[in-house]
Image 1: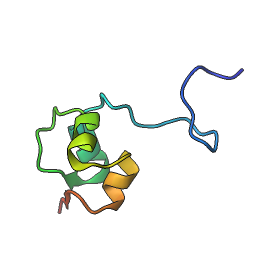
Image 2 (image 1 turned 120 degrees about the vertical axis):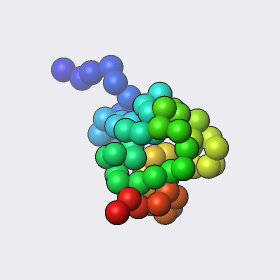
Image 3 (image 1 turned 180 degrees about the vertical axis):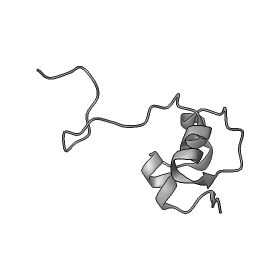
Image 4 (image 1 turned 45 degrees about the horizontal axis):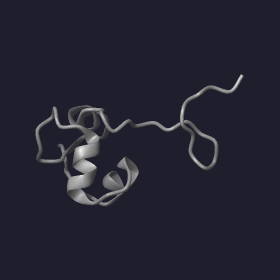
Length: 66
């Protein structure tokens, strides 16, 4: 049974919602984006001009935590 969730062009489910907190991404990817951890991902994407979280991570934005 097909669900009602949004899917990508290749049929996979979309992973990240715009209302997810940046702090969650920072923990997940080991990055520090230099913004408040309670900022929404959608706001950060607008601020940086990126289209997706994947673009944000691959662009090198955010320092890697050591």
